Length: 467
Image 1 (cartoon, rainbow, N blue to C red):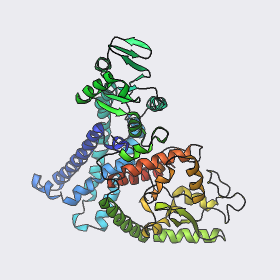
Image 2 (cartoon, rainbow, N blue to C red):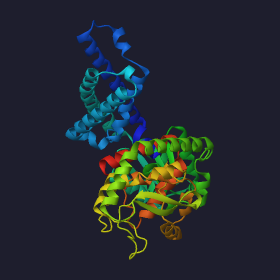
Image 3 (spheres, rainbow, N blue to C red):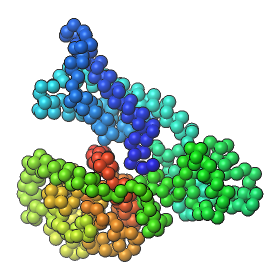
Image 4 (spheres, helix red, strand yellow):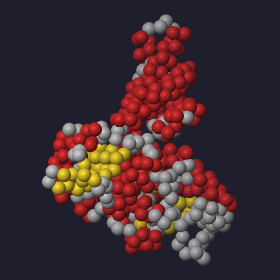
């Protein structure tokens, strides 16, 4: 159970995604049918003649745009106005992209304005009503069925309980916590009282589907036997740190030891050579393409910076890369020159007086990040990875945070798992929380996860969330 999979393609959302793909194709066939019926003699052969392998790829673009517009976030399902607005925006943008690319790059399979217009008109209500049906039939029933039992008195139990109670669209709304469990031959004590029921009976009666163990069960032979029985009956069993990780998408540093890193994901090859090669090639190709496409914009930003101040166009700063190797990070300057002359090394605040007027726009639009494409092309950073930080702050954090240097075992990135989360990196607990997300990414990195983070980054920029 991985959080990034849960947030996009868990069992229920797989169904939602499949439904979206089917409805997008159904809408396309209906649009083509209407067009053919009006202008030509209707026949199934004429309809199929409009279907090309590239058209199929175009149609698969819609779910990607749907994700960026938060249409897999169940929180907006209840807000009809917001839902229809997001669906309409997503469909129109996806249609616009398809129209643009088909006209510019693949003119021999132009879909046609009439078909695209009809497809949009049909798709919007279909996707809206599909989400209302999905909410009523699947989500409400899902919330009633899934229940969790947590056993143990470790402090991590309080954290798990707090996270679940705060609510999350993938977290069941029913929780039972047994903080005190003990057993003598023939007698079980639960929360300080003699229990007439075993854990097995309790789980059966309450229809619990997931059990989380926060105690060392070697001292409880009866509990251990019952948990083994439950596992083979289909009940999901987690230890508390792993469940916390699956629940939050970050590593519970306060509750783990070195051995946890050593034996986590046993049998899975960590950071495989194939993955690294694919990622390196993709980084180089995307960086080169990005530089070529954004060159006019970068030139415009450079001229604007030069005209607005006498400071250098580029901001160059030493950061720590893979294996703590220093490199020079390149960004467009957004602050006054010598911004740290009087303060020394300091994180930028939201309303930092050192940021210029143009700099505020560059930061808000993220145009200041564009020169980092050259860092990617040189192989110093990747598109996705832990964000590179200055050595001064890295040294400070390493003194007080366990396992901190582990974040340097992979190449840093322009964006990362921590950057698309909703926490304040400037808070006192910010460096610790960032490391927890970074370590989660390092242990679960894959091409799919990287693509997911890139989509999440687009969503974060679009809706002004995350860091």
